[in-house]
Length: 60
Image (tube, rainbow, N blue to C red; front, side, top):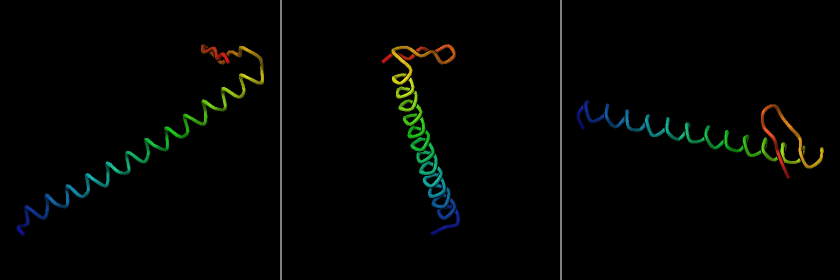
């Protein structure tokens, strides 16, 4: 295997690892967003049919 082929293989492996880490971060962020949405829904239900948070209005 030539040096050029080794370098290309190394770069490809590095890109695959970077993509995997990026996907994991997106998954982690998605979980946090779902947790926040759930918390806001529960808070809105406890505080009555409408609870305003800034410019957003949440309804049951």
